[in-house]
Length: 420
Ligand code: NAD
Image 1 (cartoon, helix red, strand yellow):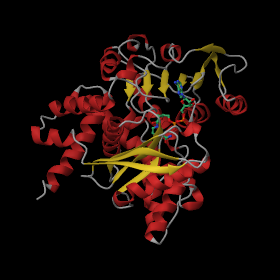
Image 2 (image 1 turned 90 degrees about the vertical axis):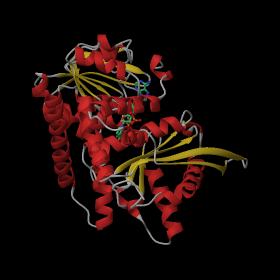
Image 3 (image 1 turned 60 degrees about the horizontal axis):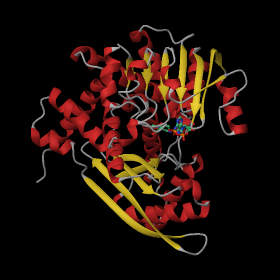
Image 4 (image 1 turned 180 degrees about the vertical axis):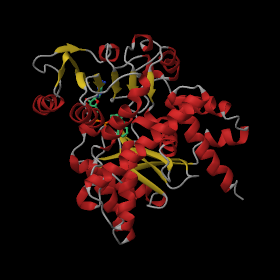
């Protein structure tokens, strides 16, 4: 999926997005500068003993972008291409995401430069525990609450929770979210991102002139976020899933695919490719299909200047973070495509992470139905908030979401005042 997008520095994109909204909100230079700087960044270089007895020094980051609205919240990514600028951008986006759905959080993010696909489970455990110790002084349930991101999962969170708790001398489940249920994780967290995305598509459909029942849907990236969205749109809203893809390629059947059967096939064979009764397509082609709803749910920088005019969907719902570059946004807007921006469309994950943290702090856990009902309420309210700003200010949904989010952060900065 490498394309022109790969060269784009995500933090430059994040700052450009702030500038666009700062102009619209007539923000003064001082506030604008605050919004374009991470509040706190920690770089850690730490040794890990590898299975062959050697030591390898890894570099990791934790960025706390803005905490005007509350403790910072955001995932930890393990990837060979992690950079400080990427972590800064992801931390900025977390700040706006938490604000757009009105959670009492700021935004943060972490990353370790490593190749988890070539590390053993023991090596990953030692890396995680040492990284958790290194960032330990700046995380905590009232300060900064990590969660899983690319190539980290509930096991990673369990190790971080345990490491932090060992150092405190008592169990602190609220230090991370996305934990296993047995350690204070929340019901519904696993499917929250896809579920939240399905709710906002349902809310947006009438405004985009489509009915979800019978609507054709293509999903790029049939992983956690994408496959759950596909299954819920299919099962609960009667949509027709016509194409899905993963890192190995995509499949298309205009008559519709059963996402459950595709998932079983992927589990057995390692990919959706060659699913019986489908035609193979590329990860570029899936973006350009004549569908009602396109869900980019894989990586960033997928819809660019190069292919934006070929997108035919009526709704683009960004389950992935940053799948559309700013130049492409303009084209999609001109084509009257309803974009449900990432900071809204995939905010279901952080919303249920917030529920998890709230349950951990109370020590009182909610049944699945209650979690989903509360998630639905947050997503519906947030979609309506964004839609209202878009209508009032004649801007597209991404700008509207940013206007709403940044205004909320600015209000918190202003009412708190600048210390000292
Ligand atoms: P995942 O690893 O479960 O799934 C990713 C899917 O994308 C996999 O099916 C993978 O095969 C596919 N993929 C990888 N490279 C690809 C490529 N080059 N072309 C097409 N498909 C490719 O990850 P996920 O948790 O579903 O995350 C997907 C996106 O959603 C990311 O951008 C992530 O930041 C975002 N997101 C996830 C959550 C969450 O709670 N899981 C929350 C918010 C945002």
